[in-house]
Image (cartoon, rainbow, N blue to C red; front, side):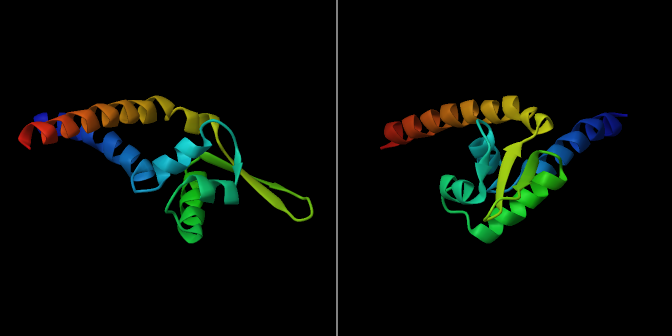
Length: 116
């Protein structure tokens, strides 16, 4: 019984982490959370990511319904990426991670000063 209960909590968390885990997905979603961007803008706004990795991660986010890719038939063709309404449901989680990360950084840095 306890094992089943534990599993019912672990599986959805694992599913969520499978979608947003990795080094780049949260930074990409964060860069897109305010407004849509073109590929080159995203590449510039997510420091350290390669164009190949950005392309791969955007495709994964699009497949999972978190990001929408819009192609404009202009000359030259332009493509914009935006967080979907469904993707915006992650905002509270991303903000909670940010808040926790800030607190954790302060805690770790203050502990380092005490140990010196």
